[in-house]
Image (tube, one colour):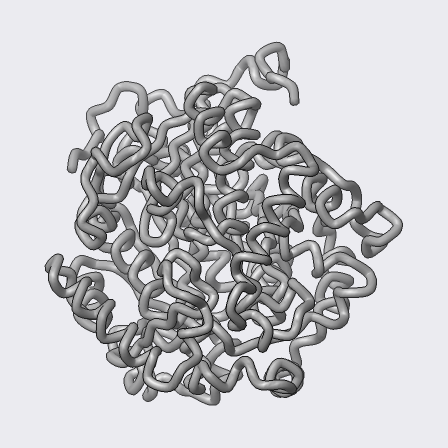
Length: 175
Length: 175
Length: 175
């Protein structure tokens, strides 16, 4: 990880509108739409990396990704091999009682072994590094959740239109 | 596949059109690749919001997302809890007879209760707001579908190369 | 909703570094995170199309997408209808013994019939056209894989931070 502030190529950039020449003014916005443990991580890891590189980072939690910022869910995300052939396990096993718990336990262990923290700790790190967390209004309405149900550092419940306004000039990822 | 080097419209482009400072010239292009009911909505909602903010919006329907613009499928998208632990239901239930129908019915109800219309109505709204719908050539070929099988406002069946050409300067989302 | 046409910050824009005017300098970076056969293709097809249009293309393989560049897996990606209602098959069937093999066989046939090559051949074509392949450090660590286990044209195992640095000014897609 380096910061490009001393990069001479970056210096004459008058309009750093998309980060084409360094991270000055570069913005990344991630839409986190999944609540499965395995698909929670990519957004968190990319957000964390982008903050380390000096980017402005906004995360928008929507649909199933709402679990990632819901207090009573965020520490309990689960993993299932169902629908995922890259687990290299017979799909028929995935529906058996106890398999989701076992697969979740196994994945947590693997993630922990390489030194990557849990989802709440990752979010905490992102917030401490200056990342911004936003909740989707429509998802909150669908799930009958309010600001009180959400992880405290979430800055607000906003509409898709607000998100669009906020992300002018940003690189976008839908996860 | 063509290169735009001789395109006169492209030549005088002086203004970085990635929307770094407002929505003038800002473009959003969404690739809709899923045909499950829950994953049909994010693209439609973001497209709708972006049109409301004055962005130019193109939607490209490909792979499973082809169902979203196929006449006999678009009103009948289904939802399954299989593979999705954020439904908080035992995965084993998802494969039982009638569960997909029940889960689909429940989700339609939830979506309707918060005032969000069905997929065909959302598409109609997007087209009325100036959004552009495009179908993927390879998907059409794989499914043996022609323009006649598709929702009428779809402007054309285009290749991935056409889509790449069309999205110069756009913010991209793969859903 | 606002339009910022009067925004003075927008006025002096001289460096259109996001490909707003053709493919000169335009960059596309794809994050391939899925290892199912059907979700391996979109990234490969878009990468291939973008290379044909003259874009600089980087592919970053992470999480389940790691299978796409792992020697002993890349030719054996599988497809399951589980969790995917757009297959129009009863979800209960997906878990039966032999169904993944049958569905995979069927999909390979369909893809082959429209003249699209297998995953290893698509990657070869991308590399020959100048595309760059990168493996995710964290995924390699989780799966205890080293450079020797990976498809040879993979240029390196890099961190998410490296990927962020590499993609300044690029259009991004998370698949």
